[in-house]
Amino acid sequence: MTAQQKFSYKKSADAALNISSKVIDLCCKKKAAHMGGALSIADFLSVYYSFIHTPESSSLFYSKGHACTALYAALGYFGFFDVKDLESYSDNGSIFTSHVSHHVPGVELSTGSLGHALSVASGVAYAKKISDSKHRSFIILSDGELNEGSNWEALLFIAHHKLPCTIIIDYNKLQSFGRTNEVLNLEPLSNKFEAFNLECQVVNGHDHLEIFNALSSSNTQPKVIVLNTIKAHPLKYAMDSLESHYYPPSEDQLTEGLKDIKEHYERHICN
Amino acid sequence: MRDTFVTNLAKLAQHDEKIFLVCGDLGFNVLEEFGDLHPKRFLNGGISEQNIAGLCAGLSREGYTVYFYSIGNFPTLRCMEQIRYDIAYHNANVNIVAVGGGYAYGSLGTSHHATEEIGMLRMIPNMMVTSPSDPSEVKDILDITSKDPSPSYMRLNRSGEEIINYLNPFSPGDLHLAYSGSDQKKKAFVSNGAICFEIYKDLVAANGSADLFSLPIVKPLEEERIFNQLVQYNEIIVVEEHQLNGGLGSTIQGIICDGFSTDSFTRIPKIHRIGIQDSFQSLAGSQDFLREKAGLFNYRDYL
Image (tube, rainbow over all chains, first blue to last red; front, side):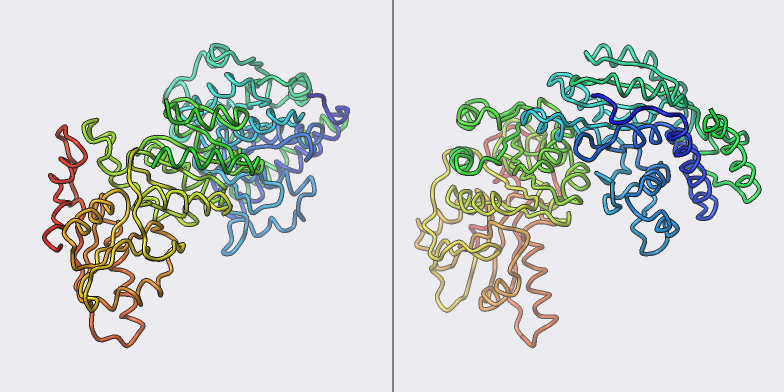
């Protein structure tokens, strides 16, 4: 896999600023949960849609469906639909359900029950492989989601058939009711993937260039990218907190959070 | 039934290059016929039914008409949520085929008794649910599911089942007349799956004075047609190798009751339901032994 476009901090940081801002704005206005896990993956989505994705060359399967605000905000920002449509998020009759819906333009698969998307993506990748297509499937999983056994069935299958899949783990180290190493310890995580005969790379999930380089170096083989991330990044009041999985920001926290996001990304935009 | 399934699927795949067969590490001496003819479209996904159900949904997104073959509870109950969410909700072209319906794998124990799956799958939107009574209905159902892009389930028994000489043509969602012996529409049996053939044999042997209908497609149904046919009888005996809860008997009861709630009929046929009464069979035994233990042969009281 080669990158479709040349990397520029300005482009992906601008995207991340918009996506993260939209996430906390939606969570505040709609009193919605799952802000923390949406913010931890916003940088990856910004890089992927800025430089990697084209409909012909790749599909993104978003397995951590609860963190839907980040995906919806990214798809809106990148023009899959009018971002104003997202104002109906979670309202009665809206297509924007609070777990990812395939009725939203740009979404490949409805998710919400964890441990499903990797299997579906493996079927797509198998079909692509036997038709000699250059297409690649990208699958985003949460870390807590790795508790689900179905993922490990899918990893066996993907490794055995050497499928063109890039598996992204959003390793923010917090799951629904505790720290991942306290609930069901995943460590040594990268060793587990390597023991499955999968290439694994660990990168800073908030460093756009590291993410870009990891994505750009993918070839036809399967690959796992573990993103070291921080839940609710870069909100000072909420980072690395279990509460950010549940509580929406108050009006004051929204104001403060938007400022944090602006300050964080403008450093990159001005580079 | 399973041989009819594989032979006919392999034949269909010769003309339809989108037919794909996935198994869950089962099918020794059965599926080779398909795999030898179409190696690129045959996949053993390993003992991982949850993953296979999802990957079948993925294959279908790439235009394949996918068949997922395994034993009884494995491609059904083991991966029920993948069926509901990845397959049915996305209306994926995935057709699940389970061999060993009911007590067909009798002595293998409760793990291999498929006695709840029809009721569970029937409740899932978009799913066609089928339980053919003989090899000819297996072929009829394959002809439908290979062309219909919606998901489906087909329960097979094992192998060696005989053909029923039906008295009317197969019609999707409708009753299939297997035997006619009733004077003035007094009594009809309704059944499906391999136990339907047992009733057929008994009626033929006894020159029985009842009609026998197979209902090989459990969902979707031509409910009005079924109502109009069955309402003419005085007595209906529904026989199923399945739990009574949510099975064929309750389906027929529902159709009859719905018909009476909307039309001006004044007479309700007596309906007797024969099936498994909310229980497991934990002893070893042949299919017939376990049927007997479960009281399924009590239909003979009505012959």
